[in-house]
Length: 375
Ligand code: NDP
Ligand code: GDR
Image (cartoon, rainbow, N blue to C red):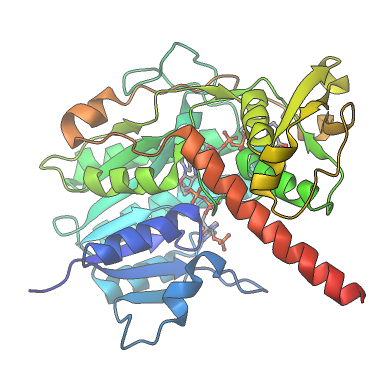
């Protein structure tokens, strides 16, 4: 039987890496679009690209870019996919305030280019299209909790561009009959999350601080609340959305909200450190209230905690404040549960443990390397 073919934009990103493996396990042939970078950007895919072609003959990478229609038309035509997952984006909300036009070009026009390429190539009846929409669309609308019927109020160039892409997806579905769907995904994280997103920034800093490679963790708004899930669960939902009889749009969320402050506390607790907060707003700091040495030793074998009660480990830095903040995102994924049969399997606690554990082991390697390179 002919294998199903999937084409992924954003294959080198967090979701691209998880979705590639998910689809390969399901027996798909997977084609990923990567853009040219001055240094290798295949870290999250290394085991897939290092395997010899005869062992792994279903995973292919191609150069292309969301700002380059010619590459998108050519790759759609060459790969003849059954399913297209549009994951590529300038995905950093804060950065989008610095690069608004580029963000719009990639996130909004890039989606339009891909949708229209499907039409140009007369693939409307063959291709199923997934658009990586986002809870950032809700922005200022805080009604708890946000679902498919909640109005949108985007608060950043990133979100306004994604709003265009959301409607372009629906418009191409209604105008040309393309099986095009939006997954409105709330924040999802993992050990492969980019280090400039807050969860990974926290877990990476804790790893490095415990091995004395970094002194302090600098953060912005500690009071923002997010509905965090695990990327592994969320890519399954992306696939399920394209397996339905009718194209539709779905919220994917854990249904639980946590503040940045609580996330920081949970990560430090895992390594035996309890924090207390002092000050307010830009002057706020997180100091050590107590250290559980046994707990520390269980996470960082062979070492005692290098910090004492009273020491400051977290500082607020206004550099990380955004011109517009999204205060609360809290999703209601009951439609996805009812129609897709989707529910998250990995809890926040399990995810925190996985991320902190991964970053402790990376920091350990970094510390060893540093020690030997200084000898
Ligand atoms: P990442 O930032 O990890 O990955 C983004 C991907 O897009 C990378 O592969 C990146 O390539 C690629 N990319 C960026 N610009 C271009 C371009 N001009 N042409 C081609 N490729 C490009 O994001 P995630 O994996 O976390 O998210 C996947 C998608 O889901 C994104 O669209 C994001 O906006 C959306 N989303 C994410 C959520 C989350 O919590 N993770 C929640 C809701 C939506 P490179 O590696 O070279 O930088
Ligand atoms: P977000 O994720 O903006 O929700 O977008 P991010 O992790 O960047 O921020 C979450 C919240 O944490 C606050 N925050 C900080 N954020 C960062 N990055 N760095 C800090 O130092 C810091 N301190 C506090 C932020 O202000 C914010 O409130 C992510 C991306 O993956 C988008 O692509 C996706 O669409 C949405 O999630 C859903």
